[in-house]
Length: 125
Image 1 (tube, rainbow, N blue to C red):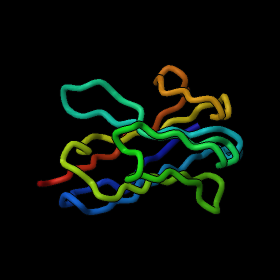
Image 2: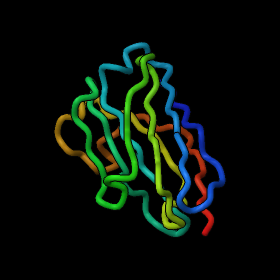
Image 3: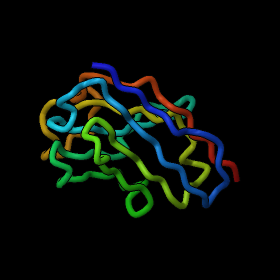
Image 4: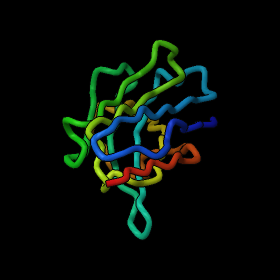
């Protein structure tokens, strides 16, 4: 299984970005997907997750109300829409696969088995 994260870039505070996570797995729609981020000098932290059917969503408090995770019409892609971006959102963003289904809130990185390479989001003040 290979995951490819893309869509990062430089944006001004208050702006928006949409990140994409594309999987090589034909049954990607049957697993949960999470987004994590890691800022320089900090630990990787959970951002959001979506269940296999797309009906159960979880968000970190720091992004709730500003970020939206969703599945594309093509079942092998998951998106993370970030609005009202803040300088503290600056990080490398990673998508990851959770084989459990994603119904239960699982913010720990060790619950995810395959990871994308990361895409850098920089928010300028």
